[in-house]
Length: 373
Image (cartoon, rainbow, N blue to C red; front, side, top):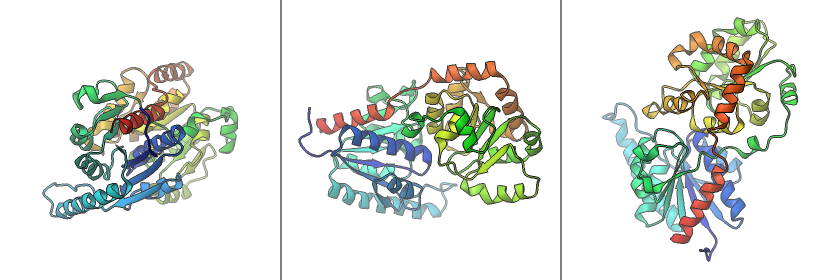
């Protein structure tokens, strides 16, 4: 069926790069397939999406929604619930004014009030679940969604099987379109074009354990024949800068709070040390990058450990538990990056897990829902 009017879609969610990158990728795919489409993002005030989404060229409206605090009986949660109700009222007006054909939820604080309101107003909803272990919000929204796009098999334990579509996670398109060579990428970081290189990323905000693991083994890095690109995250940038100022400059260590040219960083690296967020894993799979995963223990339902195990049990990644990282991460990284056979095996196995054209497939499902009404 063809839609007889301009396609209008609301995309809701955010909070971290792991939610925002897929959301923008889906929006880009919708626009590529339907250039006339109008897309509106709904996010949470004060969160990362309020800057990142406009930078990607899309309009966003913010809701005063926040997460529950621990313990759940805390008096502060009264304010959280009042904000949720206020957000629900606001988003009903947003939906009424914009009149979307479909609402897409990608996870994050804004998804729940937006999809609840859309469902109540009879608008078809689609959920994109990035993780191998579904979060509380998406599980609660599942009965209200017409379609649930997932990145891992076996998600029937969380969602109705007849709603599930295995699409994979959308990733940043510029990473897949990368044309820079490994040698040129290394030179762009001021490095030797031939020497083995490690990329360390802790997500868009950084990762304390990963950063401390590096700080505690600076001499080991200095004395190695391996080059390190280290994204610290903005939160830890000052602290790490102060620590590095107290030691002699390490020539084989490039340090930055945020890497804007991730295509070059990935191209330069023989192996990537990363948290086990869903978006990061999807990128590593599609690029065939050998990786060492250090799952964050500070996430709901410990879903990063489950994401990492989905790879490590297939010999597609090396898993280092967060509690062991400070002692073992640098040593394991140096050992692995020097083992060419291991790198080749990890690359071949992680490539087998890649799901291609995820954003395009999700965009097609959005259009189908729009035509079904």
